[in-house]
Length: 227
Image (tube, rainbow, N blue to C red):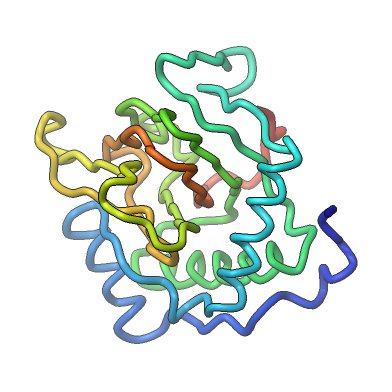
């Protein structure tokens, strides 16, 4: 089965704008704690989530995902002692991706309205962690770069159990040795955090684990997306 691009202008589902309590909770969590986790199923809808799950599983089965690297440009390396996931960058080329992009764009505008972050664009990819895969503790952006500002992870795993592992472990921004939360990668769960401030890691997974990672950025010119 291949992914069709024929429905680019017909996004899957009918995403709901994150207004009221949902957007308030998002803004409050970021401003007060630097991170939060919430159930995004009411925002995305079951149809869109199901389509995203199917799409990433097809990419995984057809070996369309590639080993992820660390850093960018000339500094990019592939160190499997630090990171073992595989990824595929998204361009909004399918109906599922178009629907997801609508959601991310609405979140971008909402965060700018609530927190005045000056977010101009986002970049996003699928990620797959096979059994035993992990990502050691890190932050998504270095201080002062004004590039990645807010990180979002959307999980695409049905019937995830505690024994399956693969949690996102979040550390205190003021004390990097203090664990302040763990997020189970269950279907529709969304983790959002400040890219420069919040150290985090992906604990080893015991079954295949799917997600979408997204970064909202303040810079205007996209860098070439590479693995």
